[in-house]
Amino acid sequence: MKPTVDAVASEYRESFIIAKLDVDKNRKTAREYDGQGIPAYIVFRDGEVIGKFVGAMPKAAFVQRILDILK
Image 1: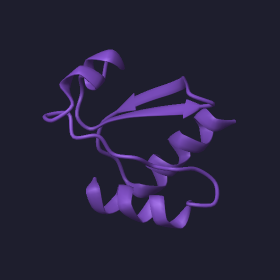
Image 2: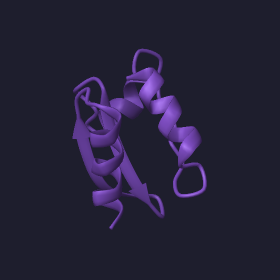
Image 3: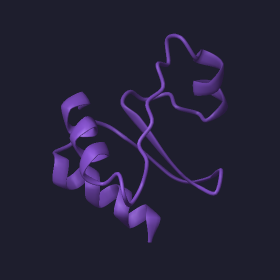
Image 4: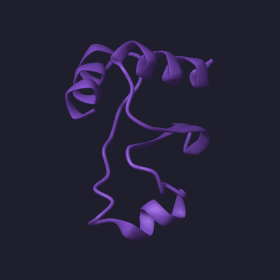
C-alpha cells in the first residue's frame, strides 16, 4: 500500500493530508486510536476521528473510501 498511499497523498494534497504512523515505534498512539489492523486508516476532521477502515485495496477504492468518509 505504500506506493498507493504516497501517490494519493501527492495527488490529493490540496484536498486532504495523509500522514503515516510507524506502529512499532508509536504503540501507545496506535492503541489510543484502536489501530489494530495493518494497514489501518483513520480519517480526522478538526482533530476528531470521523472514520476508520482497514486493509489493502486498489488505489481507486482507497481514494473512494476517504472521499466517502469526508462527505
